[in-house]
Length: 265
View 1: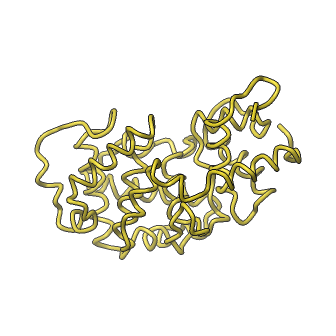
View 2 (view 1 turned 60 degrees about the horizontal axis):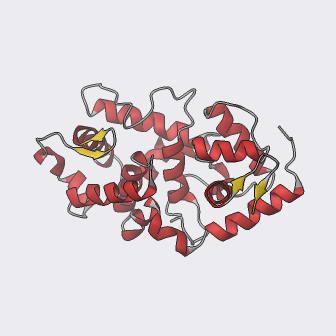
View 3 (view 1 turned 30 degrees about the vertical axis):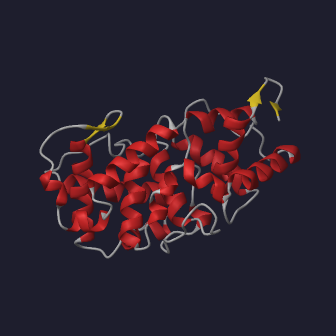
C-alpha cells in the first residue's frame, strides 16, 4: 500500500467527495431520518437505530427505517422515555435479520442511558470517547454494556458486535459521521464530545473494495485494522475531517466501473 496518496487519486477523492456530499444525497440515504428532528435526543435515537439496520439495499433500508419511526409514532425520545416498546408483544421482522425483539432490546438500553444522561453525546463524553483515539469503539463498548445491563446481562450481536478488538464497527462509525461532521450539508454535526478529526471511515465490503482498487488499502479483511489504516492514510489529505472521504469512496464505488487498470470515469 502507498504510504502517500497519489496526486491523481487525491484529486479524484476530493472531486467525488464534493459531488456526493450535497443536499441531493439526503433523500435516498438513511441520514434523511435523523434530519427530520430538531431535538438532540430524537436525532440521536433515530441515528443509532437507523444505522443499526443500515446493511443491504439502501431503498430497503430506508423503507425499514420508516417502519421503525412509525412504530415509535414519530416521537422516538418520548417512546423511549415512556417505555412504549413494552406494548410490543409479537415478534415480527423489521429489516432482514433484525426483528422486533432486537428493536426492543436496543430501546430498553437507550431508556437506561437517557434516565442517567441528558443525551448520548453526554453519555459518550462520560465514558471517555472525547479523549479516545478510537471514539467509535469506546462509545460502542460503553453502549454495549448499558444495553446488556438493561436486558438481564444478555448481549445481542444483531444490535452491536461483540468482538470490539476486531470489528470494523461500520454502522456506529456511520452514525457518528452523521452526528459529528459539521459542514452543514448532509451530516448534522450535533455532537460536541467528539470532533470530526477523531472520526473513522465506515468500512464495509463495497468501500473496502473501492479503497483496494485505488491502492489505498492492501489488507484483505474489512476489520478494525483495515479501518485504522485506511483512515490514517486519508488523514494525510484532511487531518481535520477524514470521514468526508466516505462520500468519495461511496461515489466512486457505485458511479464508476473499475476496469483492472483503473476506474472508467
